[in-house]
Image 1 (cartoon, rainbow, N blue to C red):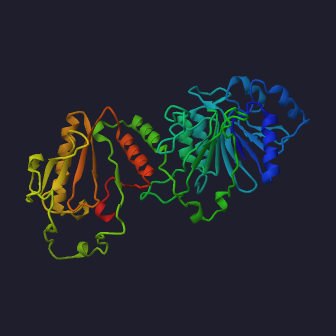
Image 2: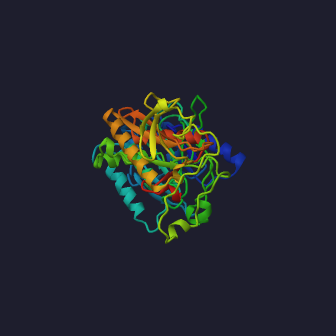
Length: 450
């Protein structure tokens, strides 16, 4: 069982735990995050401390989050406070007899060094990370316990309701969660319940698949809104799991919410100009069971004959985009090159929405000959430079669906309204809402090989 802020309401908590155990059976432990003690805890706590009452289940708690409750934790390194109630300590790793590994960090984030007794600093987080990441063959931890939420946890995910996850929580906790890769991460303090969609701990196509992480925030005990404050779950230690079973990805898995914040931290250390922002590339197949497959036998690459200029296929019917076709609307054409031309979009999303199109009848980017690719690249570079001079950046995409002629869409958006990461986040969020899986491609990949 995991529990949110108890706030000293021990009778309410343990009464509920007894009821659950009588109905559902025995639980191994109770993990409490957030404020275990409150301003009026002393009377109830005295009965447990004296042994007059006993917790019905081994209970593990985090430390103080304010000066008022520091006195309940006499030893900062942790220890038993009463029978069946154990304070884990300021930070560390608890290993259960079953092999379950529970990382924990007590307190709230502080900029001071050293941090107050009820807080943690960047140094505390760094030392905890170092002690765990230096373990041979470290793959992650089973559970992470913190009181604050991790900042940006809602990125790419389902809504957290009234909580703004871009402003709420701790950036240090985000960094810790990104490094420790917990299978379950519990937090509290915001007096609400939020179970985030599971997220990946690897980059698709670039890294070996890893287990997913689940973040669960719990409400306060006995809250009048009836928000969930107890969470029951079953977990097999990752050390005892079949590797293939461990890395299975559920259908609702999302991208890692902390990747953006970590990249921003890196940018602070080595700032990039707007024009130097790394591009993001995505690929997905809307029609994977139909249409022409890409050659994968490598015969063209292995041919020792002189390379023939690849001619575009001829259209099977009228085409609105072949420049020589009577159907093309020539008043929209902006520029004509040797192999490509530039045109305004007929039903543009914005007034300066333009298209890069091959003069010949090519269906997709992957079908283009090398000389056409070279000219497309020149058009892309010229457009990026032009729109940059207008205070904009480009979003480029190919909508290869029921189309016989390649259209490379170029959408300019204001530099001061969004970053490349914001654009990427929007694409991923919209794709997930439409149940489309986007696969991020490494920056210098050859898309014809995907």
